[in-house]
Length: 257
Image (cartoon, rainbow, N blue to C red; front, top):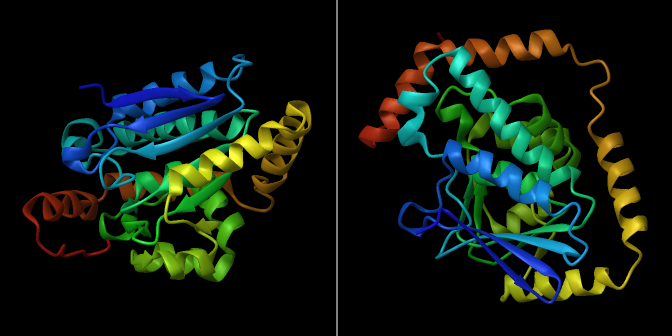
């Protein structure tokens, strides 16, 4: 079974994370494949909008942590991994067409990362969303944090990243993580994209380019220090402890080193 399934209906492309047995956990290969898929829609005039969703009962439980021991063991591997993740979210954000994340079930970690890169987030009322990076001693990359901050504001972004909590749909919509709640989230996303398809594509692509560019400005942020913090977390004993605790299904014992 393909890990990513692509469908088309009436000018709307559906990109479906297709690993339901493991909650649609995203592998490194999938991050890279998503870059090609979304980049390919740029020149396809038959596609007027894209829905990103998961198969089965979840959007995505996040990155496939089971492969971290092999592909993300230290800062060098982590840096290469983050390049792939940033390239994926960058391809989604750079597509000059509206992209809706149709979310149900769990939307955690890397799944939330994907949703943040979309233009809109429609969710089912059973959605649980969060970023548990603080339970793995991972510092999220600058681009992901910037997108989170732009959507939720400073206090909520800190709460999400510091606490590693999971938030229900009603609370998530108040925080800005979700835009709309629907009983039929895919149907609502399709209807919305059909509405947008009646408008001028160049107007939408131009507005998206400018709004995303203005949102992603780093301002006074010291990028060198920010990257150092990412690297130190990737090399830490706590990161190893977080991975092991996840696999062993126990609470991690972090020491800040």
